[in-house]
Length: 395
Image (cartoon, rainbow, N blue to C red; front, side):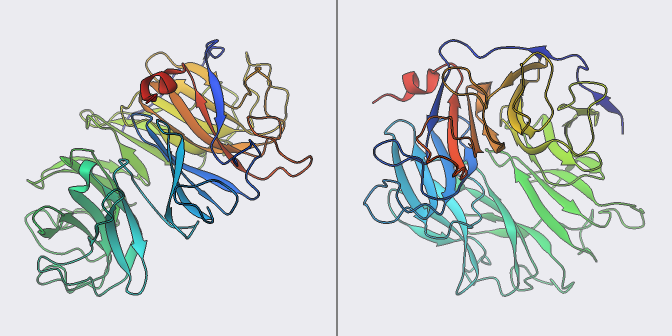
């Protein structure tokens, strides 16, 4: 597989004059949340943000404690509590539905926020719940039509006797389910497979397998397989892959690799892999973390302690940067509304399509909420790069 590097010399840009930072984990009078909050994701259109918090003082729809999983509506500027468990693993949200792992019994479920309809996804075609261990990572297409997950269950499809994690695709409209991690031509695998990603329209899905899908073909490391739905055609195998996300147009797969900890874009048609977080030739390894990829395949954000040239980065701590991949233009998100850099570290980002907004968490005490001196809890902030979110989503 060919590996390339995107632009060794960065194009450094200041944020537009209209850019504005907002605090999402904030109480009714502008105080930062009394506890830690962590950014999860921003929807591709920038309408909603998702974060977890153990702060109980944030105003939420319907009142009560805000501790848990929070959906922030940028149009209404409201917070809705989705789950009481702040460590809950929610993978995707369209603003109308979300997917979560419930306990007692262990079930992957899809819930409609407005109607409250809550349906199990980890079931066989007749609606019987999976009888094995469910994986903690699962993925949903737009409108919650398809749910991709892995499980050790042997009752979801016929003739499942391998006692391994298999990957399943559930059709929430018809109830049908199929095991997608199988040998070419049919037959179960003899090692584990894990769900990784699905396109919004459900036409392509991605899973990792520790064994080749072709009988007799050796494989040194686990590979990612990009597969077409519903035909099951393998579109691309990516060797030595791992966690990642497929772009909405199905043209790119974004992933992170260790040693060094870096972000890559794989062109699905050609298989060419390009490192996209690289900025300078002497960049240290294992410095970049908390990557976020826009679903349009055009933007990347990440956290790094490196002081990139051109930004007057003097805070000696981790900052959030984001990049336009078409020309390698680089921006810094972790600055306040007067252009002052964060006085404490910033991590864990998510970026909307078009690079219009960046969601991240930071311990900074000089950002868009009032933090008691010396506290430095993590709070969640939104950088609205062009102020288009407010204009687009005003009632």
